Length: 257
Image (cartoon, rainbow, N blue to C red; front, side, top):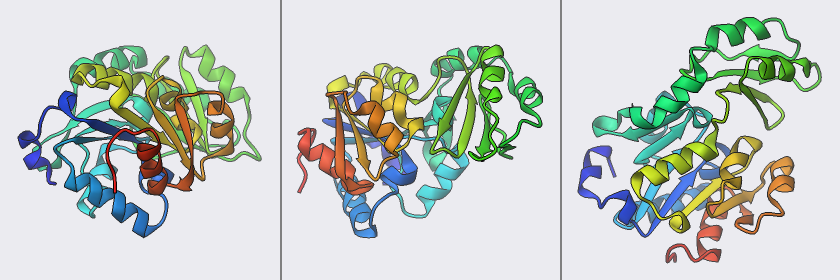
């Protein structure tokens, strides 16, 4: 379904089920057959199924991805939780200002001071993308200087290491979990009708936030270790998209073939 038709759908708060999913390794993971099966099922059930992308990716990447055939989401929690946006006509990803105000205030235009403070730190390579409320680096685990963590703490900001190869600097208290909870509350979605899906440590706050969740098969071991005690998190055997479908069935969130 194209975004131009989203206005014809029921409000998200009235849907039977809402999937809030990470992309790489999760919604985009698994076999081509499994992805097609899940994507086709979503498109055939848009009246009762809502779709939210919760990702470290930026809006430009998401738009290009969906133009290539992946189902369009109706909302996006992007940039590791620092973007909360609605997908509008023509596929425009439009930040929801009322939900982003707290994020903006917590960030306080910290980009330049973060880049200056971490300049030259061993094992960090600045990513070229100009994010609004975060600074991101590629991380080399063999040479990474853990002093970077203390530097970020001293700036009054949060750090996030995921998949042992990415280092994000985020506003204090801002990540995927708090942002998806803020969005679902804003849309009036019943918490027990949401499934959060992820596979790496940058999904941890989303899987820990109390909403029904799945760590798909093939997830980062560090993530599985953290969520294993949590009764609301299903550890799927199936990989990627198939793991999402497995969790929908196991948790009885929506009828599936």
